[in-house]
Image (cartoon, rainbow, N blue to C red; front, side):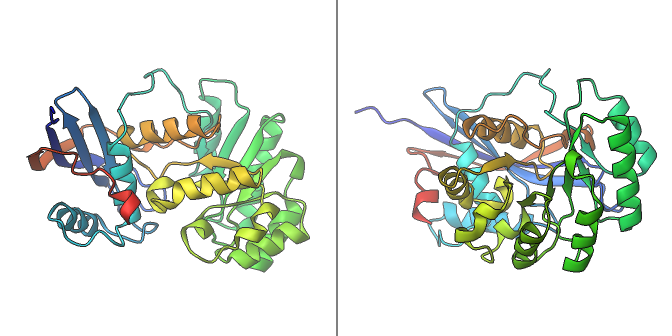
Length: 312
């Protein structure tokens, strides 16, 4: 019997990043897990927890990975590490460089948003706009401007749970409903989001609530869509995708500001779950050059990552 030989390499990357919500953050950092075999298998996964959104830090992920490779505790692995391990065990192939994200992600000043839309290289049918970062009046103003210039456009609005219930209900009453595909996570509370679905005609999508245990599976059907961010959900990614399919709900695969490596895996997942418009227009916030440093490499007589996720 011929045994395969495997090599696991871990690199630390650091890449210039223009954080949309914090000018003081200038770089994105993360780990690349590269898995090779002598039968020409090559897989690479990205582990890049997002500060302010992920429940774990990059250093915690690295410590968990080291413990894992030393046959220590496999339980309670960080979500972003779990997703990176899952991806590293899949054959890696890039989507074509000419592949342009299905729709633009809009944030910033009004002039910047309108200029970005004007320069978008394809016909615009869908756009995602970050809201709840300024005043409600300013949000409504830019929404009106966009809808006036692009009357056929469907808007996905993302509030990241920043409104309370009364603010969200006020916004929903003033939105041009015919132009709104959905409003994503208007409030941090799952129950408040559920209340909005029952008191307004604006379709509501869930994002942050899925990353906690606060949501109720039996009432998910009230929502238009589930926003799936695998690095924040880890192993729960596939369970939620299966649950959405079971309840005949749509899912939208969305980026957490990964590099090209991570975005390739998100595109593949979007293809697998029939999401034609994944939210991966985040690569434009990253710029070159990327610094990459090898911090671990080891040869194995077996796949060191095999079956890890299933045993958690």
